[in-house]
Amino acid sequence: MKNRKSSIERKTLETNITVEIDLDGSGVSLLDTGLPFLEHMLDQIARHGMIDLSIKAEGDLHIDAHHTVEDIGITFGQALSQAVGDKKGICRYGHSYVPLDEALSRVVLDLSGRPGLFFNVEFSRSQIGKFDADLFVEFFQGFVNHAQLTLHVDNLRGDNAHHQAETIFKAFGRAMRMAVSRDLAMEGVMPSTKGVL
Image (tube, rainbow, N blue to C red):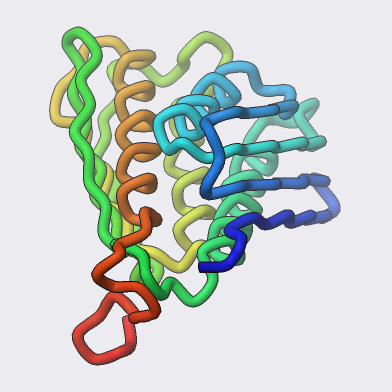
């Protein structure tokens, strides 16, 4: 299987973002987005997904965080799509349940080549520190559309919005780790019954 690294740069009128990933990394992150709580969540993806993740983002944060968060999701999705390549020899599917005190989340994904986001989360409050919790769905929507995968995110319970978010991102990292893992029985084979996803 090829080297599973990628680097994507995306520039728009609102943002300038570079994402580098190594799917066979050791869980190291280097994050500079101007959004500390989002960085805390992205670090969970790297740690629990065992991928090396570097994200540098400059955006119009003087307006709000919407463009920056969405465009980070888009660029991260593009980077994953490039790194995973033709998907031969991988598990394709991933799932994880993660608890944190009173909170519990489930994430299930399929590297299907078809974008679909099902985000069933009601945060206990709209702000987590200075971060707008509504922007998490924008991050995942951008990611899903450009990674071309199906993603189900369910927060099953939780009273603390920080805990809810953290369980989601940890579960997402672990589900992604499972999906991109090499499956020796499928070496050189597309993970589908008909040769197409």
